[in-house]
Image (cartoon, rainbow, N blue to C red; front, side, top):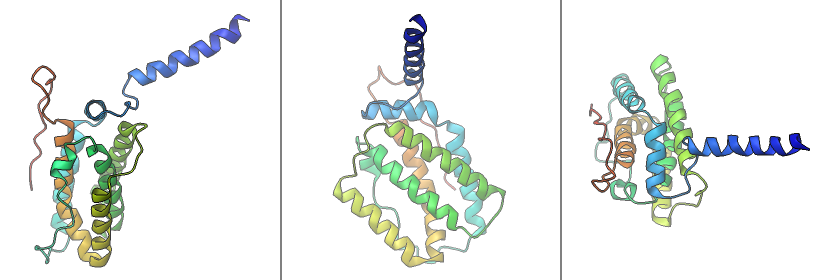
Length: 192
């Protein structure tokens, strides 16, 4: 009789312990920020930025400078829907980096780090799997359409704009809070 009772209690203790150690937040923006702050190391964002800068040098030049793939998500990232936007952007860029024709170690490392970032963003999104608001959803859809329309030029353009996404991830994680809540300073990513 005791073993029947002890096993469920032990399982429940493991689950509660996991929830306390960076498991999915319960949907608030500050919990998502804290989750990303714990699970996404500064070095990972810096390494992604450095590797992307190096990769850009090996790709053809961006001949269509007037066209931007990324929408202006800067303000939206700072709102509660920011983590949902980041999830969609990371998913988009995972597809972009699979299309890059340069096959070397740095590209594999980028794909591994981006996959890890995607998993962490998904994890920190938690149970709030609701869809993006229509404006942001349409913007992501247009971004995908432009990328497909541009074909190989789209890869160069998307990779060239990736540092902006990394800055958005960093700004979401280290967004200013009240003075009492501030514990960590933002990671400064170098622009290439």
